[in-house]
Image 1 (cartoon, rainbow, N blue to C red):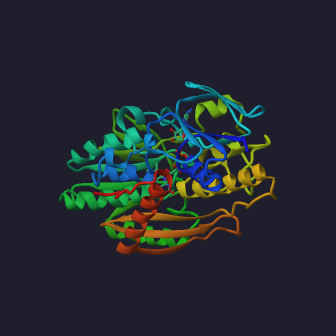
Image 2 (spheres, rainbow, N blue to C red):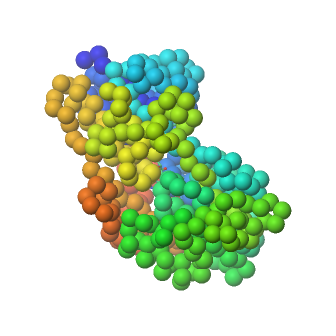
Image 3 (cartoon, protein in one colour):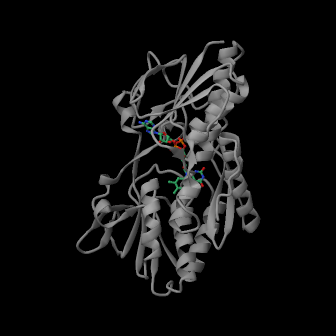
Amino acid sequence: MGKRVVVLGAGFGGLELASTLAEEFAGDLEVVLIDRTEGFVFGYSKLDVMFGRTTAEQVLHRYADLAKPGVTFVHAEVTAIDARTKQVETTAGAFAGDYLVIALGADYEIGRTPGLAEVGHEFYSEAGAFALRDTIAGFDGGDVVIGITAGPFKCPPAPSETALLLDALLRERGIRDSSTISLVMPFPRPIPPSRDASTALLAAFVERGIAWHPETNVRSLDAEARVARLGDGSELPFDLYLGVPVHRVPAVVEASGLTVDGWVPVDPATLETPWPGVFAVGDCAAVGTPRAGVFAERQAATAARRIAARVRGDADGPTYDGRGVCYIEFGGDEVGMVEVSFFEGRPNGSMHGPSLDLAADKHEFGASRVRRWFDREWAPVD
Ligand SMILES: Cc1cc2nc3c(=O)[nH]c(=O)nc-3n(C[C@H](O)[C@H](O)[C@H](O)COP(=O)(O)OP(=O)(O)OC[C@H]3O[C@@H](n4cnc5c(N)ncnc54)[C@H](O)[C@@H]3O)c2cc1C
């Protein structure tokens, strides 16, 4: 057919997009997949490494292992995007496509939380989470604050999971009694789109003595006094500060003039941007769903099927339904699961578990993606 799709970013969205197109066309469509890193890491694997459940090496899925028909992986930084011509500049040269998909995820602005870089730790980047493995292993008790400066942020359950996993680890090490854990979130409840999941998390916080500070944020960290200053005017002392940095689109997306109110605008049903033939999926796009891998993946599958339909000259293809399933770590190897839909009235996700069976489901969730995207087996946790 001679058509080419250029996919920017090989994360949850880009990998699913390339895999779906490879499956649909078995080599008859050229897909160029571009990423600046050497491999993919699931968001939740960052917590597994940080809490010493596995190693950084074991959670890295190398792009060198990709072998999909018609898919060429290019290890390069995207430096400019022209949505009108569907041409991009990269550190490995220029690429143009008949279709362009922007799946570059979200970057972080650590400097937007004064003091975070100096006296705190962010646990949202791979480098930040992996470095925390040694910091947490060497922590001998004290005040811990887990804080958010501003939304939107990836995987809304992740800060609650961090509090529960930390609680479990400090208990195991016999230093929970000499520690406090505070969780500061700009939401009225831990997972706004699910009352059930929020109720279960709040009960777990009470049971474990985790202090919950809703509807406020951490504005800054005072390096001298070692306190977190909150939006409501109060202060929390900390020995260890674990922060969610402020999120933004990658600089190249903004510099290329693709954003409105900070994110790439798309039609939520089709994931197409205002530029015909240019799609955006996942964390960089304004879709109306939370920023999480499960949503990026389903958006990518929809965009891929719509591109496939157009390449074949068929009708429009499917529309995106805004549904997703999220797993939540409760500590002690127990995992809960929330099923939620964002495009069918007010979202109110139903909660299952927590249970050990759901922990096995979560393992299979990751293993099945590695099988599908990289054609190999993976045992996520040692
Ligand atoms: C601690 C934590 C826990 C999480 N847990 C979960 C979970 O349990 N379930 C879940 O569904 N989600 C979870 N997430 C969220 C999930 O990781 C993201 O929402 C998801 O990866 C988004 O997919 P994406 O394809 O939009 O972006 P990403 O997966 O981030 O992929 C974007 C890709 O673009 C590349 N890139 C960026 N800029 C450039 C450039 N200029 N040039 C070249 N390449 C570039 C990046 O290297 C990256 O590979 C978690 C996140 C965190 C931080």
